[in-house]
Length: 214
Ligand code: MD3
Ligand code: FE
Image 1 (cartoon, rainbow, N blue to C red):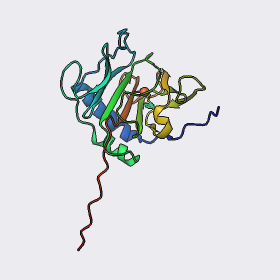
Image 2: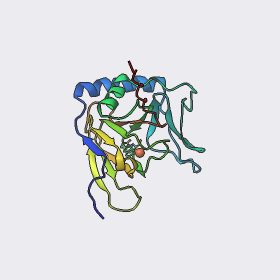
Image 3: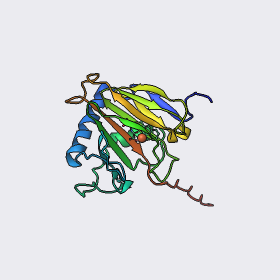
Image 4: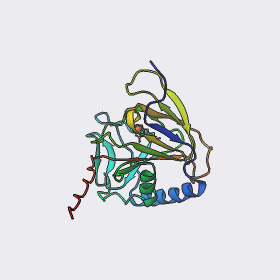
């Protein structure tokens, strides 16, 4: 079996400047103030994630005893998710992703938080890439193939790094082994924030305007 990186994976180290990271971290703090972090739990067992989450954009990912799903409102406040910061919409389109992103999932890693190896399959389309933006402390990111077994490799994701998971990489297994405390001063109190931009529903490409015959 080949251990070449999956087709459709693009790692962009330092894609965001220090100033862009600062501005984005401030906008994310505003989102969290309006849509408080919640602790997702595993369906059925109710075991809590160590990562806390919130969302912005028209839809947001939630996890409770009933399952994993996207919904238009915050699970605790019932409010619609805050608007997606324009700079995230712009980043998404600069990376060549289609239509507009429908959600930005905000994962907050306090020291010691991690995320086990998993596949992201709750979206109604896998045709669009997932775009990940890392802020704050460096993460040890583990990525495998499109089946649970087989070789994995580990990559460090630092503040300002952006990763595009398109093509075959869209369905790769991945997780966060650990976060390196003290590796960044971006976030007050340390820790790490990961943003993932996604399409949840299929989009239709506008059909060409019929050309007038005269
Ligand atoms: C590959 N987040 O939110 S980012 C997730 O750092 C998630 O918080 C991790 O896994 C984090 O689902 C990893 C990298 C990532 C995110 C989403 C992906 C890789 C992905 C979706 C499909 C394929
Ligand atoms: Fe994931």
